[in-house]
Image 1 (cartoon, rainbow, N blue to C red):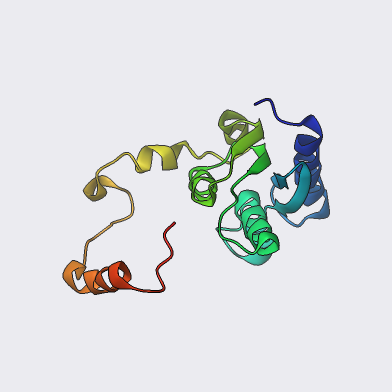
Image 2 (cartoon, rainbow, N blue to C red):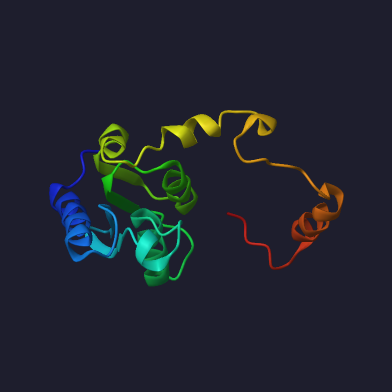
Length: 157
């Protein structure tokens, strides 16, 4: 798979316009299905006061809304920068077909978006992570999972 330069250029244009407009960080994303752009997204973290509003997450939300589904099967994603760990996980959950990126993680780190800490943090055991992560009421919490296992509303994903 080689990708389509025009779709990548569109993602890059979105990133550039996002900076020049003052709406957010230098990240743009395009979701393509059957050779057509079905949705786009830009970084809206600071404009929406939402730390999850990265370009890829915004594009995934927009594309899923257009397609009326929670999966992006047979979709290709073009993003102006290599996805951070959160966006990479979201893209995997979306079940997209391929991810194409422009700038890489080292490029992002050079301008202040260094995700290496997150990649290292998730490798650590829970009790060694920077933010405490503590198991609490696990047996009580299991009740919702037990109901899910038997639910007629269950949709596997």
